[in-house]
Length: 144
Image 1 (tube, one colour):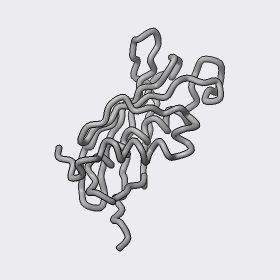
Image 2: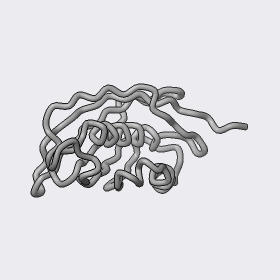
Image 3: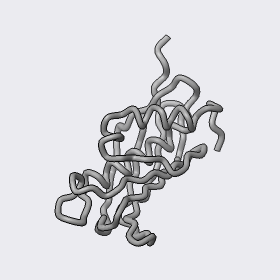
Image 4: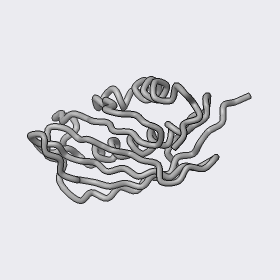
């Protein structure tokens, strides 16, 4: 995939990490390439619904951020995007020390981009798939 903005990775990281929720949950990018991202969110008791297990909201945030950030890597300079739909399917517990989410673009259009994400629970260095998501992002032109 081709990213029309040569500074897409730096811009994406700056924009996402400026969001209060991203900072609050401890989101960190592990890799950013054209059409794909990998990020992680560490386990914290504030994100759990019982000791040692992350709440669905944290899993959703990991999936949504990964999918829509992947879509953002393909935006022209000055454009932004926002989630307009995201379906999450939890298939296992998020009972590790962190979540790792991998997002990738499925279909990039001018106004809408569809992306997917897989979220893994990482315990002792081993990943276990805990959720999948399909998200649609609205691509927003800069105001003239």
